[in-house]
Length: 153
Image 1 (cartoon, helix red, strand yellow):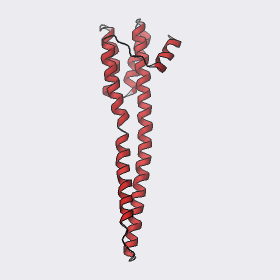
Image 2 (tube, helix red, strand yellow):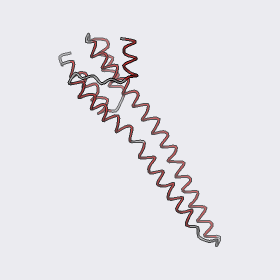
Image 3 (cartoon, one colour):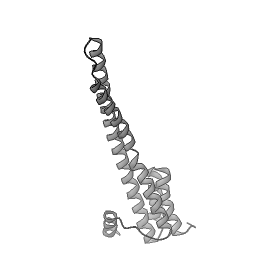
Image 4 (cartoon, helix red, strand yellow):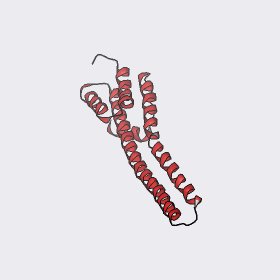
């Protein structure tokens, strides 16, 4: 292709980190698997593809779980606030414990919405580190991926 094998391997990881989309990594890996002869580059392409897809699936699942739990916590918070409000209208004693529990649910909702970003940031950091390592021709062993690669390459 005209660029070094090291640079091409690093670009695969950097593409996964910068774009965060699976398609460009899979297209580049497909090109490598079809047209390049270097076995190390092919292994790197498959490893980058597997990692990108894995991080994408993990981020999607945790984002979905976070959305469900955040919605649940906000629903509980609103139910407690409405229930306490109607108690106050009926002339019953103001219950500050219900407001404290409602605040706890609101805080849990904020925490859950923040937690969904952690795997995305970790994926970016890991892919950037792997990109620099690939540029220097240093292979990082990831046991479950290397086991698949050893079996099929």
